[in-house]
Length: 474
Ligand code: FAD
Image 1 (cartoon, helix red, strand yellow):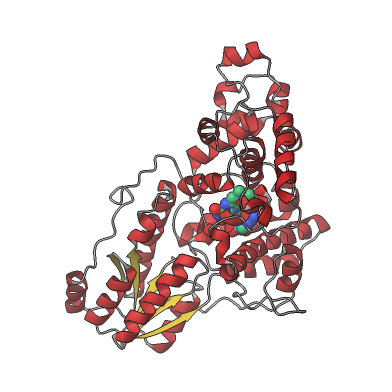
Image 2 (spheres, protein in one colour):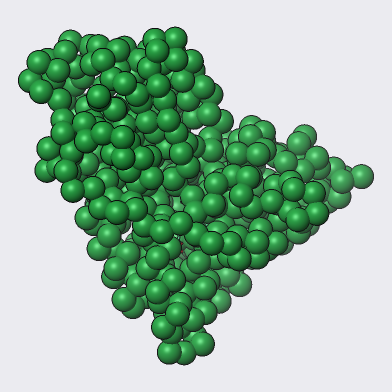
């Protein structure tokens, strides 16, 4: 009996709950990936993300081959293409791991219905989270948490699953079956360029399971111990840089968790222990936002809080363009946007700074920023990105409404020598550190470096934003 395992955001063999479940039924398990036009033809797809994804699929194909099976690639509407392939191959069942995104939930319902009509079984499990939606609920009313801290307390207190045993061997399709697969649409894996996406810069994390595992080991050997302190400094490589691997499930979340549990038990200092626990808290943020999206899919459409549902955003297109290009005249904002545009990634501290700047200083709808991030980030992920933007805009579930970051004081705290600014804005790297940090650059100096005038005055805009907010609230 053949089982097709449909990979989506779990581009790996190791520690994959759905795939393991399939191999418990039969050794004849063949991987499947569907290039879905509903995702790939959207206008918020980042070339860096597609490049990373294709690289991961390449390695996954090799892994299947090494195990004696194949990863079949098809292209088209999943609800048509997958049942058609499964039927042609006389598959007994299609297995996959579940997802929290509104589009995925709907797609999966449709694929399930078509497979069922054809008499093909389906089986699904939760794999991408340590705790599936519904496992972490409030004690008082058995409902999903809307605030992070109590969610974390409950989340950390519960037992977590262990890493699944390694899959040693599989059986794949024979020659005739492979021919049948190509007759119903199986194709060679295209390059990102063939899909219409070109990315010219290096990726922060090389694609594939091997590189993600190495990155985790490297991080857990050293950087994690000082994470509590160093994660805030954008010039330091103080974070794991695993976000894209976690987004695409290139590394199993149980593998990641296990690495931290072992460390937390053996820390020699409080500082080291704080590093490990603070990092675990980030993993919980990831799960919190996924649970929120699962239970409140309306978050993907717009503001959660009423006072932001009809907010009079100014939405000035010229200012938005300056923000996108890193030409606001605020060095920390411009450096960060340059990092995004030229690496497909941005340090978390800077994501918060530029998001605050877009919403509170430029008074531009956070959804414009959310979309721009998706168009650039190689770790772009609906739940984390939407969560981050709604947090920064103050429109989300978070109870603290008016969070406004001052670019100068953020720089003074987190890039006090201007190292990050110099790295990403080389054209002004020889300016005085004080100018870079305070952003108070004399006009002549700006002109001689051809660096733009500030497009807004932070103090003025801050007052304006607060005023608008007050009006909305009343
Ligand atoms: P680490 O600091 O090593 O953290 C470990 C992992 O925890 C991350 O890889 C990520 O999976 C998770 N994580 C950490 N912080 C958060 C968080 N605040 N919310 C959710 N998960 C978190 N993260 C994304 O993965 N994709 C996005 O599209 C995204 N957009 C964001 C937009 C804004 C406006 C903000 C403020 C944050 C956004 N984040 C997003 C969260 C965070 O910035 C990144 O996860 C982090 O910078 C990735 O770097 P890292 O892997 O080195 O993280």
